Image (cartoon, rainbow, N blue to C red; front, side):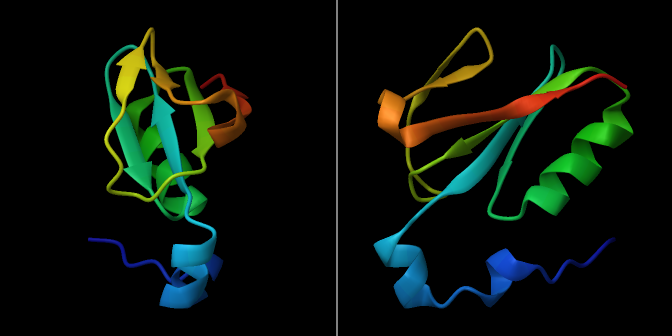
Length: 86
């Protein structure tokens, strides 16, 4: 098991409440959400498939629908970060 300590972990609970966000990534086979982009990228790279990553400006435990591998949230709450081809 791999343990991570990243800048996301260092954010105070107050900062997380004032500016909540998490990262969402998906491929045709899997998906993941985490507060740490490093965890998201490491996990998705092990899958060996092309995947896309988004920053979702909502708390990690927020509920939202996914449509064609993309979170269905308000445009202001979603930032496309890129697609990685493995």
